[in-house]
Image (cartoon, rainbow, N blue to C red; front, side, top):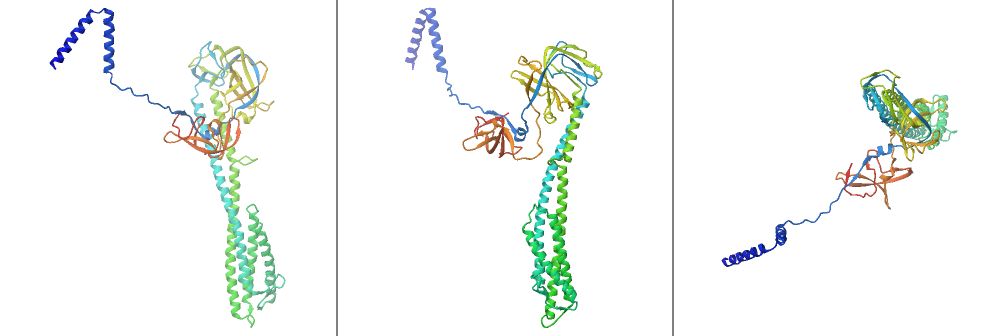
Amino acid sequence: MNAFKEKFGLFIKTFAQKFWALSLFKKILIAGAGVTLVLIGTHTEKIEPEQETTTARVVHIASVTDLSRETAPLSLLGTVTSHSEATIRAESGGKIIALYYKLRAYVEAGQTIAQFENSGERAQVLQAEGAYDAARAAKDIAGVNKDSINLSQGEAEVMALNTISSTYATLDDAVRTKTDSAFHNPQSIREVKLVFNSSDSRFASQIEETRSTIETMLRARETRNHALSEKSDLVSELYAVESETRIIKNYLDDLALILSRAIPDQTTPQSTIDGLQSSTALARNTVGSALTGVTQSRNALNNSIAASMIAKKNFDQPNTTSVSDAQVKSALGNLRQAQSRLEKTIIRSPISGTINSLSIKEGDFVSPFSEIAFVSNNNALEVLAYATEEDAEGLAIGNKIKIADNTMGTITSIAPALDPKTKKIEVRIGLHGSTKELTNGQTITIIATRLKTKNTTASSAFEIPLAALKITPTKSIVFTVGTSSTLVAHSVKVGTLQGDKIVITEGLIGDMHIVTDARGLKEGMMVLVK
């Protein structure tokens, strides 16, 4: 060990003498190389290989009902008109609580310039929305009640058919099985004779004729029963069966009476008469019970038919106005009236332009029809269009409108009533963006984005965006997101194509939340729901 230390010390001393004899440049090179070797030697961390990272695909989901409620854009014909200036006046009075633009500011069509104090109007809109939702819910309940009552009517109709059939069997048994032993040739119609003698021959002849009549009636009823169905007039049939049952009940009463007047002889001893009286009494009891059953079935069918008629009146049916429809329309009218009052407290610019005059400031009290602002634009244009009453229900102030390739618009006003000349509702559309493609007086086609509507009737078919459907060689599927944030595939049956939507006839339910864009996705893929 000591020899090694001496040799190592001699090496260091020799190296130091030679190092200091070198030039400055070489000293720097050797020092740098040494530092590098030290760093390399002391760097002991392992360089971990870069691990492959995977990023979860971001997807959007929406309920099938919400996707199906969206309606297609509305196409309207409009006429381009010119505005060089617009005087804005207050439609209502009150205190100005907000002023969003200053003098000489530029505003887009439909933008709000100022706003009156309108907490009361907003509360009325909220209340009207609640009443409208309640009316729609009541209509849905009426629809459920109608379906339930229709089911009850169907059950009553089935019960009526069963009652008619079972009553015929009871009458046939009471007459042909239990009591026909009192007659010779009871089913021959013309040769019916009692097997015993009676002290009242005239009454006996009358009973024999009644038995012949009943035979004809029973044969007709048997033929009629074969032709009956749930679509037949079952109420009338029940009345007829009730009448026939009463006839046979009276016949059995008369037969019991003539048996009490029977004269026993060698051919018909008293024991035979006693047996006939016993079987006749039993037949009378069964026919009486059958008569009660027919009456109850008829009353039940009448009640179910009446309830069904009331339910149909409460719910929508073809070519009629139901009570629930009227309530929904009334609530919708109140909602629109409240929205109209609220809209009058909001001052909007009808055109795009510069505010050249502004006569209000926050805190001012303004009277109705007072001049608020003056907006001017020498090149300002707007579009005047007319929509049917039904189409206008899907439009609202502020809706975006596509006018041309480079021109967009916004609905600035919707007339509250039909125009007496065109019998349609006037819609004014302010423009923004490039108007180079438009000419004053030009007739153009515009595309309006409609409001979402709500469905009130349950249905197994839904319209979903075509992008939400993935078509494979063997099936068509939509995706939902499982609890582990992985995609779950659901097979569906597709129907007709409706523009950029497709009808799904089977495989979906309204509250199912599906991925809105299935392109590039596959089952089991990890996703991130946004």
